[in-house]
Image (cartoon, rainbow, N blue to C red; front, top):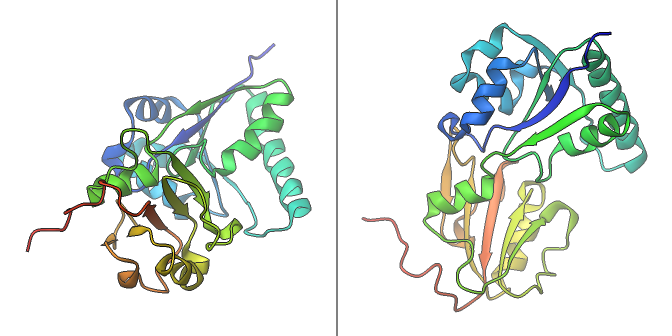
Length: 241
């Protein structure tokens, strides 16, 4: 009986191909199949990042897993199960799959929704960590995300009322692009110290150090760091003239 393949969820980082881990590179080279969420693997941001570090993946079998960008839970669940079935058919043939995803596969990633049913059906799966967008953004901005005893909260802004940032400590607002104007208005009166990154590590990267600088149409790959007022983390971190 042919051995089943293994499904790897591989984080390729936020944009800079040099941020791929050594493990990610090794597994991408060894994989039989490269899968990614979308209608065309070659058009995905994850593929465009990974292929710069591992050009060999361009010669591999590429499997798109179409995931609708909707908020309807029932429709999403059907899409996840359909995608899992596609992956299982490949694994059943003994092929190893590298499912590539931006950042880290454990943070707001499509992979987690596919991995669970595949694992529950008895297949082997593994998460391969990658550099998260918020860590890369904080590094680019030279702003520590948390120091000493400060808590850190990672929040999906598209699923949360931006005016409800009552958590103590510092917040990272991901997926802010669709609601940027609303998010900015709430942040202006929050009393928090704000900085942001758009397209960090990608073409068109832009860094902002006040909420007023952030454009309303900042785009999908927008990330905001909202630090508790009076914290020492954002002090005097302006770019040199």
